[in-house]
Amino acid sequence: MIAEHIFRAYDIRGVYGVDLDEKVARRVGLALGHYLGGRGRKLAVGMDVRLSSPALKKALVDGLTSAGCDVVDVGLVPSPALYYAVASMKLDGGAMVTASHNPPEWNGFKLCRKDAYIIAEGMGMEDLKALALKPDLPESGVKGRVEEDPGLLDRYIEDMVSKVKVSRRLKVVLDVANGCCSLTAPKMFEKLGCEVKVLNAELDGRFPAHLPEPTEETLAELKSKVVELGADFGVGFDGDGDRAVFVDDKGRVLLGDVVTALLVNHYLPREPGAAVVFDVSCSSIVEEAVKRLGGKPIVSRVGHAYMMDAVMRNNALLGGERSSHLYFREIWGIDDGAYAALKVAEMLSEAHEPLSALVDRLPRYPTKAKNYDCPDDVKFKAVADIAQELKSRGVRIIEVDGVKVLLDEGWFLIRPSNTQPLIKLTVEAKDEASLAKLFEEAESLIKARLPR
Image (cartoon, rainbow, N blue to C red):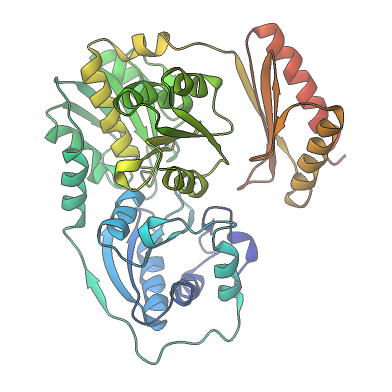
């Protein structure tokens, strides 16, 4: 009844009508209800703008209530607002119907426990999958209740804005990508007194403007509009709003590790000695900034479930991923694209100089990344074999996520993708010549293990 491959490292995801449908959604709801304890448990459920989301949400709620759980239906919201509902209302868990940045024909479910802790690989996903696949999963004799909470977004917006202080009027361009952040981000910036230009504001699950993933290509309109209007910065959001990609006043797209380094410079002086979490693929500029300001650097596995867990376990001030997920202790460690944008505005309002100037003061290290097609049943063993070979050479490595090789002239990271049949390579070096040398060495290790 359920295709096992839809259970992924961070969520459940597939093509609607092919990999999942309403029957699968109901089964996921029933399994989640059992996983969280059944009768007497209370969960929040929300959805993104995809055309299939209302039907999937209805079926998911039916599964949850059939397990005896009560449901707070928060309606159409960004994923961070769903997590906010779970954490702020002290609920037992939550479910968001979304496929995040995937194309419009996709959909799925992001699931969490109490305090918005994500259910992921190694963090409950295996147990949930086993329940969903169990043929005789029982239903409760008493169905749970459903109540709507139409006021959630207003409370969420007010709470996020209350945690931010913008000391001068900024001009901001927001590309909400026809997604959920159209409901929240513009209002937040307007409440802070910013001048706001919104692109692709119409809610549309077909994502007519561009795919709901903020990339150099999809943010072309945002880049040109920031320069044209003389804006202080721009922000591009993904489909469900847990990721924000920034564009500086010169129209340059900033990687998430660059923004993390800037936020380290903003946050750490206020709490010297605090921890900062960053994923293993982040540039060395992040760790260098943390150490320079007396903070405690903590390296994490890639992925929002693992990053959020590391932020909360270490009581870290913030966390950042190269992929532009940004996490904040003051909002339960949640990765929230709109809140990240507000904090960048706060930082910039205090700096009294352009964002481009702050970026240009950061060290610059040449970097290169490439993906290699590799079947799911091969990629993990291939990376493990590479790690074993490097260990036998006596090379200094980190195995938090894949294998990261640390050398005097730079580093390279080889890791299996958690969501696609790929091996991912990232290389960073102190100069271009070292970059070319390290890239060639790393690529040869990968190619020697790819199927012929």
